[in-house]
Amino acid sequence: MTGFLAIFRKEMANFFVSPIAYSVITIFLLISGFFFWANLSVMSLISLQAANDPMISQRINLTDVVVRPLTQNMSIVLLFLIPLLTMRLFSEEKKTGAIELLMTYPISDLSAVLGKFFAALAVLIVMLSGTISYPIILWRLGEFDVGVFLSGYLGLLMMGAAFAGLGIFVSIMTENQIVSAAISFGLALMFWIISWASSFAGQTWGVILKQLSILERLESFHKGILSLSDLSFFLFFTVFFIFLCLRSLESLRWRG
Amino acid sequence: MIEVQGLTKYFGRLAAINNISFTVQTGSVVGFLGPNGAGKTTTMRMLTCYTPPSSGSIRILGMDALSDSMKIRRNLGYLPENVPLYDWMRVCSYLDFVCRAKGVPSGNRKAEIERVSSSVGLDDVMGKLVKWLSKGYRQRLGLAQALIGDPPIIILDEPTIGLDPRQIREIRSLIKGLSKNKTVILSTHILPEVSQICDRVIIINRGTLVAEDTPSNLMAVKGKSRRCSIAVRALETDLTNLLSAAPGVLSVKTGASEIDGVAVVTVESLPEVEVRSELARLIVARGWDLLELKSIDFSLEDVFIDLITEEPIEPQSTENLQNKEVA
Image (cartoon, rainbow over all chains, first blue to last red; front, side, top):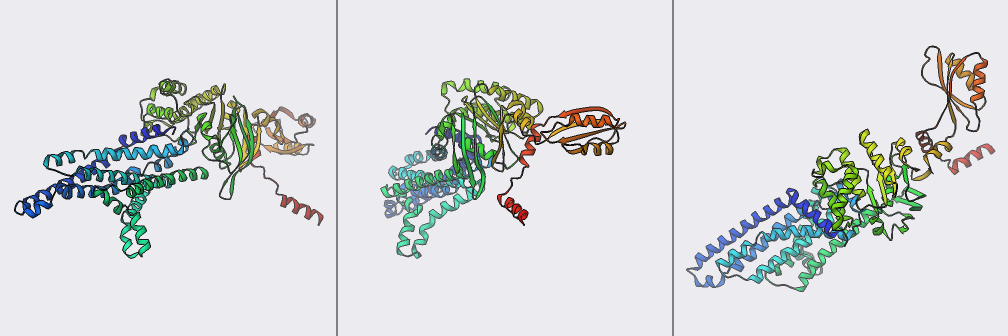
């Protein structure tokens, strides 16, 4: 793992020296803040109606009305934003030729890929940490299921890691950052909505497509259920794309 | 020490490097010459473990470039041709990153950065962003990153390209200074540079090695003819006709136009025949004034052009010629 920290530090510095991280974090916090405010407003409206109807008041809670929709909406926002974080990680090095120098330093390919991967993941964690005020506000307003909240955030982190792996793999394939972002977003979206085709893909393919769907996998996290198969899916997805990154770098070496 | 044996690199079906072998001794500066597209950069990329060879072997400091790539890279400093740097970094941060990437211990980093920056003359710009550096300073920074960690092997792809004459002189003396305890391989298109700083020269053309020797040996041995310049008070056409007929003369080229009735010509002759005495005798016998007769040494540039323009004789075409002769 020689050089992992050097690459991680460099990428973190690049994220925060350039406007990339600030822009992405700001956009994420603005949009997620809007969703949080909108969900709270809906909760407030329903609460007013519930004052006259005890049946409704027994059925509504902050977890169902605010927490679950919030993490669901945040996952869609991340679907758009993570390709922006990963688009330059290798593309820029390829375009400037710096990859030639990097690959002659005593840094293993795995260290280079993981250094960049964990830097993107660290920015994601900073983004999610920016929403720490939400559970504090909810805790002051009333009761909510902390388990569902934490499980939803774990889902976001797992999904973010999976898309970061995918995005880094795409950035090795092209020198153009815009192409890298576009393909990463396209592939991520495909894995997101792939289960939509399950209804008309036949029984066997329908099951396979549902198993591959990130939307389906995230659902259990939003419900507060941690299943080994969902956790393994995201872990395998991430490791698979990191493996592809290593193979692509090897191919790059052979092609000179 | 660098030992290259039967090095070959294919890109698809094209052999960019075809079975080249050479050895570079420790402490020497070797110039790597060849026209554009000859395979210099590809060879350098294989020597730096950036790309593996299709066949053949590279041993650097006794280690194999394929199986001990990481160990070799710890002992290597490389400056690629286009000096790829991170424009958004400050010079000091960039050198700090290179120190970390090369595994320089944390306690030695500051001293190492100071040592390298002062040796290449970067002290004045340590706080500047890389993107604001002039071409000369970028080149120096590229050289500095290659020197970080004090590697025993330095590989430089066109280190003086784009520099002004003063900077070129500084970088040359720096490279010359490195050779005391390091092995340096550099590629360049500036041939006088090779004569000045290189102990040996490797010339490749179309992926094959065409010459490997010291610059002085190449200039002495590789010339395919002798040349001399003659200035005579005579008509240029008369002089050309006289000298062309002399034994051993291959050609007579007229130089500058006649000034004050003095014709200046360059005579090319067979390498094994000393024609100067015979030419002098012929001129004096005609009653002309012989004002100057001097031998012209071949420059490395002449040798280089000579070697890279040599067309190999295809076996098939030789066979065809023999068939024609038989017919």
